[in-house]
Image 1 (cartoon, rainbow, N blue to C red):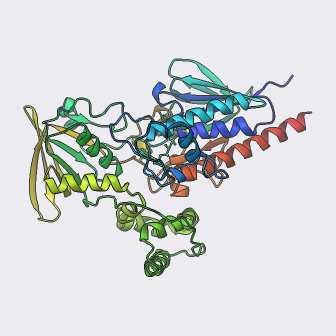
Image 2 (image 1 turned 90 degrees about the horizontal axis):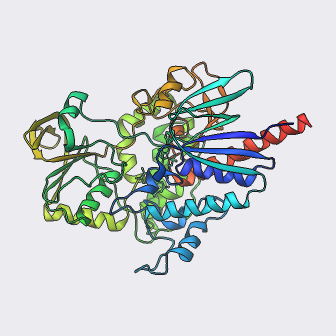
Image 3 (image 1 turned 135 degrees about the vertical axis):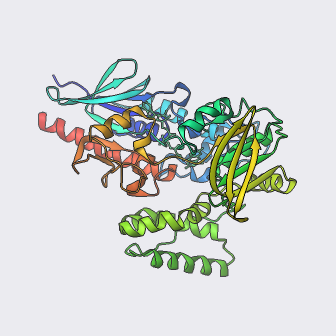
Length: 470
Ligand SMILES: Cc1cc2nc3c(=O)[nH]c(=O)nc-3n(C[C@H](O)[C@H](O)[C@H](O)COP(=O)(O)OP(=O)(O)OC[C@H]3O[C@@H](n4cnc5c(N)ncnc54)[C@H](O)[C@@H]3O)c2cc1C
């Protein structure tokens, strides 16, 4: 008798959950799916949608956050049915609603998928996958969990998500920082130990900074807040009422100059029709992965070194409400943004002295704070990862860090590519791990397509194998 096919999904965030939903819906043969998530509170939510911050809006409008490509209003309709009653403001497709609500939506959709699945079963496991071996006799993988439990799987889905930010200070400095330092802003309640009159330094000036600074403001923070990054750029703001349309770009364009001049042309043409550049950017989004893939390695390096920061503040924007709170804090003098090069920190009693070369003033300056929060964004340097599983798989050459330190090497279908260039059998990545290949891969809009295509492919493989056996 054939045993049921087993699929092990590592990571229970949006990527892992969405892939499980798609597998539950698509598998036409008996199958067992294991969803392994090391943090109980992150099951069906991951880092982004389990946030406990006071201020944690989605960075994307509700009307663009459906889990399904073919049902674009699914999240909006769910919101109307589940969250509109009792809400002070009317929820529209352009609302930036709570990330926790999105986690509720994911949880409800997977619960339904489990009930409705004709053939597949889902088991959630709260544990950390630390190692994977291949059992040559049974021809399947053995997932070794931190508890010692072993799960056998014929297929592997790596949905381990965003790496925690890399530390900006060296280990000796961090050791001295003791309780002054929040190393991972996506940990549970990262602001809890910060007293309202303490001065805070936030390293990083992107969207994670915005959520943390606005959360401090919502807690009634009275101390000063300094934000620091190399360039000091803040994310730009969304527009109040966006328009949704698609702009085809020349997908054969291989040069950065060509791509940017085409983007500029569209922005100028739209501006003449009173369409803000934010809409033009969103309209071109569907082309970005295809264009990234055509760029030469040199062009990618140039983009990352010279243009990335400029690109990111246009692409990853903050909701209008967040922008107005941040601007208000700057005008009141409570929030100051600095740019330059860090010269390190010194702990003096209860204070921390942060020294840096100010980019604008071109001279050394220092600020004294009591707390530091690391909001530098996900690290792409997997050789420095704190994730034991990824570390082990890199060490045994089953995974390979990409040359640009954006993610791991994956194939066209998300297959994990080993150091020898061959695919790891029946193993796929979903979401942020694919950044090197796809560039645009961290948002729900891309993840939902990857999850659906991977589930379709695996289901077809399984069915084909069973047909041969029959
Ligand atoms: C703060 C924040 C806000 C965002 N807002 C938006 C938004 O508004 N719209 C949008 O489209 N995208 C947004 N994103 C992008 C986000 O990356 C994706 O939407 C999505 O959440 C990524 O999900 P994931 O499952 O790939 O990663 P994660 O959410 O990082 O989940 C990965 C999970 O894997 C678990 N894990 C890792 N290794 C192991 C292991 N070895 N064993 C067991 N478990 C493991 C982790 O504990 C984690 O829970 C946001 C991201 C962040 C960080």
